[in-house]
Length: 107
Length: 121
Image (cartoon, rainbow over all chains, first blue to last red):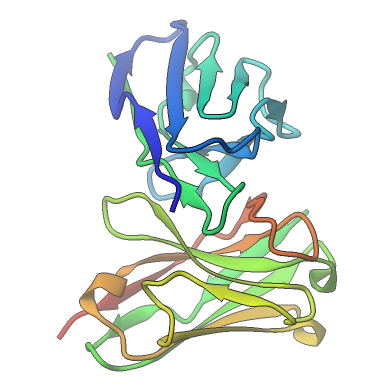
């Protein structure tokens, strides 16, 4: 199975900060990667698909980049509603696998 | 608006069975593959099983193969997960998830709110 390694596993940031989360794949997955946001007690919600395409309705402060084995999710200016856990998902190779998550907390 | 509503979760003893259901609305279920994804307490996400639009192809995670059975009834706009021989490690929130096309592409674009399964004596 492809291992997806996210870093950091958690971070503390302030409203207005620029936040970057990285996901590394154990082998190349082209751009077959999505990013999900999960708030406590809620289902995950997709933010980004195909590594860099913004899901309809998602604020433009979210962006994704990368291809192959290294990917990045960036929040350009952190808002109060962005405090959550973020997961990456690879769907290039069966079985699909998620990163372990990055918890974004308030500083 | 796409809506997925899971039901059927609960507390069950090890070795027993449980059947989860997912009611779909706001889209034509026939046109899409569907999945179950789970999340153990305080843990990350794990894909469990997927089924193509006409049930012609089905896949399972190794952790549930031989114990869980996914099925669908497009006429009833419903997805199911029959879970047998349940173990403590199956304790999790179970999410019904829509794919983007008829095949298993694993583009998890819409998720239900989930149903809790607790396996304990």
